[in-house]
Image (tube, each protein chain N blue to C red):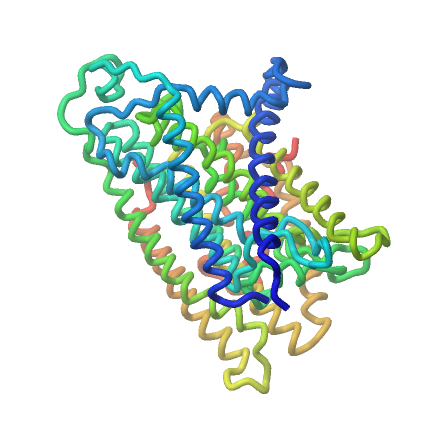
Length: 420
Length: 128
């Protein structure tokens, strides 16, 4: 049966409107929440609770003078923001925002295109986004943007590897690169009844690596080295002004929304959730509600991070990426594969072994956290947020099973810091 | 299930429409926004001092080394993803046994980790 033309048009319109609205709301919510965390009021004049502030800011950007400095490489300078925005839009196009919807006799999923290589597509678009940052910085022909551009591209490529490796274990579980297959693989219950089948539970270390990696990928605090105002003015976009600057900001905030959508889809089951026995036709809409709810949790997490944590130092950032996240993610990929194979050979044993190892890891992590051991360099405020350096070496040398302990150790340590 | 061309055609259309939309927005903005040129606006952003020389100054060599490491690990990911897709489908009936697949990838990843450990030991990952 041929699908009528209005279906893809509707899909594209709904999906992009959805993400753009969320981006606008994110910017407003961020300003409000961070203001509240700093005992300020935040924007509260335009519309109820100031909710239209982003719209007004957008209009302001639109009417601002847009100067192009004399020394820049004009063509690249003009193209760079375009690359960022387009890459952002293309990467969200493969993420479904809800279950199946039936409208006028046509049943379809709310996704622009369900590519057979969807996950790779998302990662690839993340890589292309680096071009916008780097080219924007380089084409400016100015010291601050150059430094900012190089810094953030080095940061983004480093964390991209960690993220990609974390995604690899999801792919091992799902056995497919298609996003809808990954969502379908997480439907139903997990290893016990009532526990959701989300990949975040069996793949917890990979999940943590991905969450840390996504904050760095989006260039958000505490990893916003790209626009460290105190040292780099504005980073790669220093020489930009007017609407082109606005496009960079849009791309940055949109990447927060995109990353939330991706992590929810890959690790938290996407639109899956209890439907409360609703009829088929509404089940898809309820899925959209679940998806939105999960995304909002992550968007809120991004905002809280910004309000709560100071900026990381650059060498520590790269250390975290290369010496902790990449080894952990690599070893965890192998551990996952080993468990999947073990589960096939002897059903039941894999799950039992996993639960045992996970409990042991939890006990060790708990002991490390609550044994009252002084954190190293307690005087340095930055150090508290870094995972202990001890277990770092372990994954590089040890066998697969031992990888679980340092993996969950590092990541849980980080999470502990975020929680309060 | 839509066909290959339908899927990627969607993206081609998206790119074209996106670029066109961007161009339209930029053009509209150009028509409506004020333009007050002045020689000062053409200069490099600096801390009140006249900029000397080119903006493309030398940067730390570390970035270059990290770019190299990135390429190595990114190529590794290319090998890892196809393996990750099929590894859970393997069993005793397939041409390649699961044990073989696991061991082969173990050796591959361990070699990479050894490379990373070597780089680490050599101080390549250090910033100072």
